[in-house]
Length: 433
Image 1 (cartoon, rainbow, N blue to C red):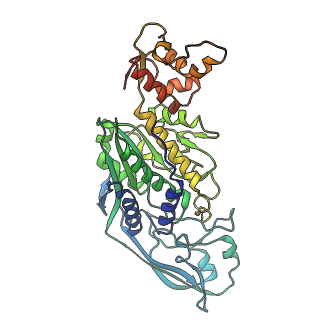
Image 2 (cartoon, rainbow, N blue to C red):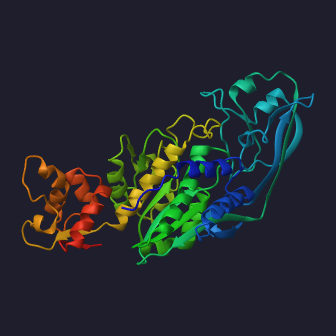
Image 3 (cartoon, rainbow, N blue to C red):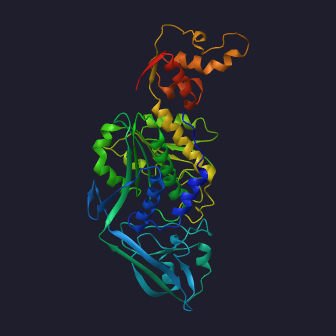
């Protein structure tokens, strides 16, 4: 397998660069984020293709919404003291807020302020994409401390015809069969939930581009969650149905706590089997059924779409306590957490590249010693060094692929690649891809 370079700090620094940007499902925040990522990968001679889909475009059962522009939002008291200001934290304004400029009583203010009562010290992340309203977010502790009086609420925003922005990068391989890796760019300043997926994906773009021999064509997609994936699929579903072998949605891949898979609807695709087999080698991992879905694996598995796509997280969205709050900050993610996610995806890429249903080309057990594959001196303990190879051979009967064999013999699938290559070099195996 190709050597995995340590990029954890570099990936973390890229996340830190996009963290402050106020993003939503449309608008300049998305474009600015994609520009930073495109600049990062351009040093390797590759560049994102940016697509703009106009407001009002019908995408399956949905319609591309108006574009949201936000310039300022705050609440101040009669003395002109800012109670909250989106300049301090862009979670303070509800996503897609309409413009407002008025004075209200404390009771009226409480009707448009959102808190997270079970976490009184955090600012929640709240949106209203498809019903026009305005709102603000703050900690419950801060709201409870406000005194009676009048408050000035102000949002300088605009909802107008524009477009939804998504990006893709296709890196050709020897075949037209494709592997898909995708994440989303639509949340404001949350490090694990928003920044980690796109930055790990960017590092993987550079890794795939560096591979000298690629069997598969790789499709990388960055889009706003839900509406962006629906929009992308509305343009590409027939192509993906014909060409896609397996895909993974990256979400919340920056912490050090866990590894997680969110399975496809029936958990019966090569994407399910391959990623599960790799996660089985981790010290800790969790598996979630499709009933626990929440990111764009929903769209890729929807009835009539039915593509072999699973979700991959470190701590799964909705499970870790900082999710969708201001506590999901740059201290929650780490270079080592991002590196772990990156390495897992590199392992998956390499295993998919080498996958096939293997069959031995000789009848009976091959003589490995004459090929330099087995110790020529038999002594207690000498068998252990080649046990993985002999076990690989035992199950290379045309029924099992790399992931099947790994599960049967209890060896990490990426550790079997070298064995497969040695058997191939000695013309001892053939395989169906």
